[in-house]
Length: 375
Ligand code: NAD
Image (tube, rainbow, N blue to C red; front, side, top):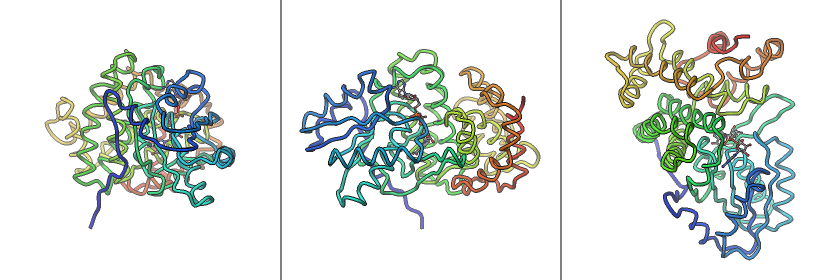
């Protein structure tokens, strides 16, 4: 038996931020990063929280939240005697809030509801049972997995994403494409997760280039916010694949933003999973060809369709300025060679790799990496 459940309430569309008015709390804490505090976004959010007696803001979240940050954030939460937490920001702020709230609930015995307000369109963290924490010394990103990490409410307000610069729009947009495509070909994929992934891909292929080129296009921003959330719902149900397995390790070693690492690998992981390097894997190739057709690419057979989708991803990488090689991403050959074996080992052990459709050994990861390991 399989099960499908979406437990987070999603508020979206014009006026979505008014959902914040329904929060009743004595002590509310907003978790965010320095940029969103300085830009006035945290104050804007606090302005909607009219039924909270006290609101404090924790704004020390850093990209790819490190393990040590969680202890600091927990201390803040306990001192504030919080009874509700609003996570405002990209995946880093939301994941840090999720992890901290989980520990705080255990320590205090309080319910401590978490409400997520994403300001990037990428991770889908507002609807997932995952939180990714980084151990920089070990060069590893740990995905924590628990239904207790799920926010009770997600508020999708496209207007909050308008300030995201083009490069971060590209990185996070490629994160959406990677989530939806990996979920779509995951070993656990089912009709429910496929429906969400297909819609996410249809929207993202249409609106990501526009959101990148014209960040003030409200429709494109709103659509990408929806695509990100749909992809999150999809992979939350059926997990991901080796693209994430490798990206987690690359990101932890070389501080390449998560979506960018995913985007650099995506065409090659899809090429490899469809067996376009040799014997075609019909299940995956048929699915990728279906997506090719959905977005208007020719697909007279599964192999041609899958190849056309791979080519489309490569074209979008160039159009959106995704680095094509590790050198372009700022990594030098010597540093790469010194940790390559560790990257391969971590990718094989990463929880996301377990649902990759093609079974992999170290050599296979090496083949995928060789497409970007050019110096
Ligand atoms: P991020 O949260 O690290 O933010 C990237 C940068 O964008 C930051 O400098 C931030 O200040 C800035 N930013 C955020 N919103 C902005 C706005 N509206 N305007 C201008 N700048 C803005 O990036 P992300 O890609 O959203 O999150 C990445 C993290 O999420 C990684 O740690 C990744 O591993 C994790 N992740 C989690 C899940 C999950 O399900 N929990 C899924 C995928 C990725």
